Image (cartoon, rainbow, N blue to C red; front, side, top):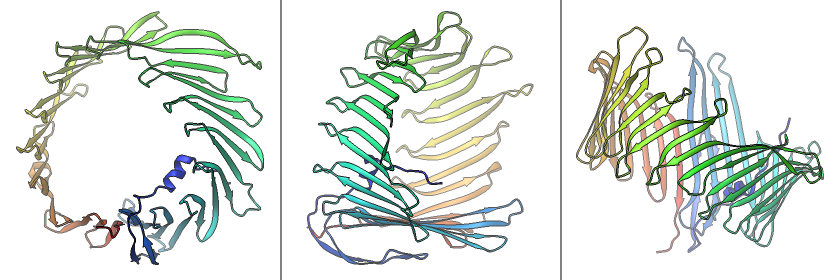
Length: 493
């Protein structure tokens, strides 16, 4: 069964994305081969600066069963080719899977091709599945370059009716209407209205027979912030939410309307109740958050925050369903950083500490203690220590388990602010792995070895103004992932 897919103008703009203003012309011949992906092409003229010329991504994945037997190995590749203006011309994706038991090979590849007019506007988009044309999209534009018509045609043409979408725009360039036709018949119409700031004021969705399915109305304060959102749903109910207008107190409303089935569609108010309310500190920070308890007929505080004279938080209380009962208490230091948190124990009803943090002068966490309690077991504490150098780089981390024994440890070395070596230890200080980072020019090589010094993985990264290239190898030296992105520059000096 085919599903009609729509590319809206926002998506179309992604396909049309270009580069900088042309400043010069240079010639470049491109030829790259990666696992049967051929992106070779004849020399062509380049008239833009710093555009993506092509993008190749290749990676491998596998799965094993409980006995360690390989179930399958899959290698995937994706290549994208751009034209001289930086627009996507072709995209080729392929997947090759080899089944472990039978050794059968399953291949799948797809191909996309774009066509542009002299203005650089996308006019056709073709999609192929295994060399068979599957779908064609056609686009039409007005004199301002705005998309006014899109046709989606599944193949073969005699089996599927085309899907047509028409767009119109307001004087500000926003889409004001969107009409969807199938087999020449109107299926839906969406009308949208904006203000001069570009804020959406109203959006209505109608069926093909003109019946309103959904309508949303928005209003904004003088700052351009959305303060009201009204929705008329298909079921005949309307919900209204007010988010506040910058005052010290915010009321969020929930209203429900029942709509009579009359041509006027006049609403009848069923109830109008404030559901949520936030009050603010004198310095404009939230002091309390409340919600209306309809069962008790009173306001219930869900969260409360205390501040010092400088407006820095000192305590924060979180309340549960029971009115006035604190479920979580958080304490802050003089800089407003959380130092302790207490949670209420369900059995004893007492507030018990759940974590504690300590900071250095820069505000970095140097010690984090977590408290754990399990039924009748004694309280257990796990700890995470972190050490930094004078430049703020994290040079060492170690974690202690409930018994105070080393769980894991990481030691990191830096050079000129860049990571050059990471050594990882496991329980009882046993070496787990060593990662070495070597940089030479714009090429960075990362090597990971096991405790015996055997290389388990290697990656090479190269990045400059013309190239981004990442290659990752497994312990056998086989390439498991590759991402390459080339650029070109103009000949201008």
